[in-house]
Image (cartoon, rainbow, N blue to C red; front, side):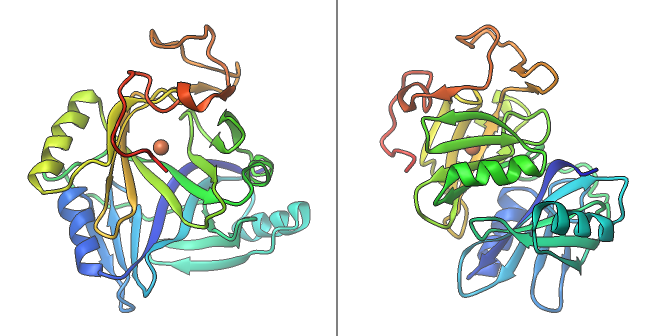
Length: 291
Ligand SMILES: [Fe+2]
């Protein structure tokens, strides 16, 4: 009926378009695929028309999140299905690179786009910048994480882990998490995460960040929930960016994660983690907490 399988893009409102364009082109290594007459900039990590949209705005922060899906239904039929099955008011729109998308707001007011097709581009073999594999996940601050979990479960996401009762992990594919909800009472991005090829790639690009005068806020260390090796830095607008590798792979059919030597549980199943077992499994403390 509706199979959401990928976090495709994130749109940021940006106060300083030049600085953010430079960050996502020169630092992240994305390709500029289109600049609209309205000033919006579209950047691609690989072959999608866009994975990041920068929209000039008085306010920084996430404006919309694009999720790609497959379905045997037309876009119009999916729109009706969402309306009548789940009472999700929505609208069909178009934007560069995406002929048809379904826009709605989730219970916390985040704007979500569902789209079945995106125009593809050919950036060639890139060598400059971080060049992550893909956007891995987005983490959002919310008022009610349980309500978000219930909503996205209806759309086919699976709740993998929790940190206590305030931080939820959800996936729509084999990645440990694609969406996070941090119950903080705020309405803003917690962080946006990009997947690196491996630990060598991660460390090399931490040096690259330093050479470009971008300092880490936290890490690298291995998290508990998800077991990703992660580090965090701010982009040009102050959005927290995670670079990670080696995250857990979820086997939905078995309800377990692929076994890894650093797991304590065999099999490792979705569970509730205490905070002190979750942030830094390597036992290192960092000056700045992730709050
Ligand atoms: Fe993360």
